Length: 253
Image (cartoon, rainbow, N blue to C red; front, side, top):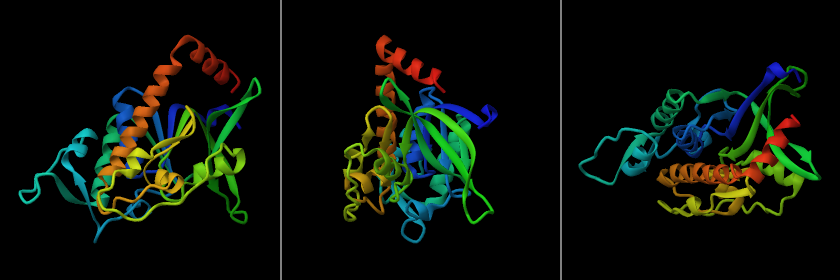
């Protein structure tokens, strides 16, 4: 593929979801460059939970954490019901405001390179459907150090990695709906250490977390936790030995 079709970013996030956008906000606020990719042509709340009659519940403290102003509800000082599309839209505006890159309408496939007998995550191939029997054509490559799977219950990027590399993770499927449960926050985990992690609904699907609906607060918190894990990993990688390994890896690309 022509190098003009390559984008470099520290993190690629799959999914314009509550978790994906929250993770992007936290990373961008720390000066870490992010590309967010979604296979849908735009924001689609139903892909990530559209709510009850189009509304979801979210706590004020978490809205503030992701840089959103809150509207106080005299009947509920803890949180607010908000249109799901409005919430996702406001999160997306914040990503653009911090100069994040958002690409819609593309499927992604994680790719790896071999270094000294080890496989390292190296980025994601973006593909668009072709007119030839629905086959996929390569569009561009996002060269990246990390991938956050925030793609929803399908967890497609993680499933593809598990099926091809068998990293020892067995998808468990999501647990039952337990309103307000923070289980998904605790089960935001690495699929491959310091390379790929699952957050939000993808984490629920892979690691068997309960679903917090109609409260999406835990989904936003899951995204923030994913970002914190990336930041912690980056700080570790900046140590001389780890940084040398990463620099060598990207010299191969």
